[in-house]
Length: 282
Image 1 (cartoon, rainbow, N blue to C red):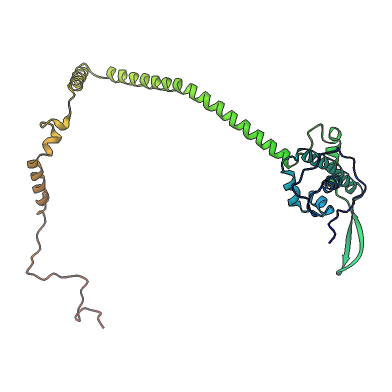
Image 2 (image 1 turned 180 degrees about the vertical axis):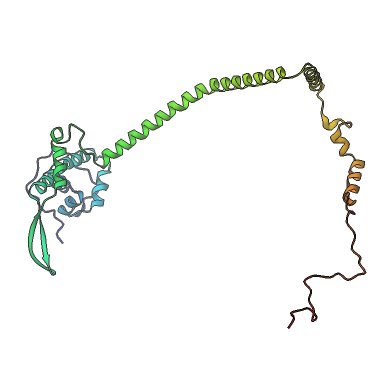
C-alpha cells in the first residue's frame, strides 16, 4: 500500500510553521512534508479525521504529535487551520441553507426521483450569526460548546463569590443578632415576673420573697438534695420505705370483698350449655 500522502487541491494560504522534530525517520511517520500537508488539509476540511485520512495517518498520531516537545509552532498552525476550516464549514452551511439539499424519493421501495429540501432553522441560524445586528436585535451570537462551558464556569465562580460574601456578612452580624435576642428574652422575662408580682397579695408576695431568700441561701451553701437524708425523695428511697412499698403491693386493693363470693362446692351453670332435654333439640 502506498503511504505517500495524496496531494490535496487547491490549498489555502497558511502561515509558515516549524515542523515538530522527530527522533526517528520512519516511512509512515510524521515527516515535515506530511505535517504541512495535514495542516493544509485541516484548513480545507475543518475536520481532523478528514485531514488525517487525506495524508494517510491516524488521528491518534496527530493528537500525539501535537503534545510532543517543540510542537508550539505546530499547535499554532493547527489552530489557524481550524479557523480557516470553520470558515469553510460556515460557507457550506450557508450554501445548504440557501440552495437546500437533494433528498431521494422512494415509492414502494424503488427510487423514483429526488426533491430539494430546505432547512429554515439553519437559514435563521446563519442569519442570526452572520448579521446579528439586523436579525438578532444586537444580541450575542449563538455560543458553541466551549462558550457554554465558559459561561457555566463564570456562573459557578459568581455563585461561590456571592456565597462567600454572604457567609462573611452572616458571621459579622451573628454576634450582634445573638446579643439582641438574649436582651429581648431577658426583657420579656422581667416583664412577666413584674406582672406576676403585681397580681400577688401582700401575704403571697412576702412568702415569695422568703422563698427567694431561702433559695439564694441554698445556692450559696451549694445545697444538694441527693446528699440530704431528710429530703422526702431520699426518705422514700430508704430500705424500710422500700420494704413497706413491696408489702403494700402484695395486699389486695381496698374494697375487693364488696360482692358475694361464689360457692366452690356447687356446680356453675353456663347459659350456653345445652342437653338433650332442651326444647327444640332434634
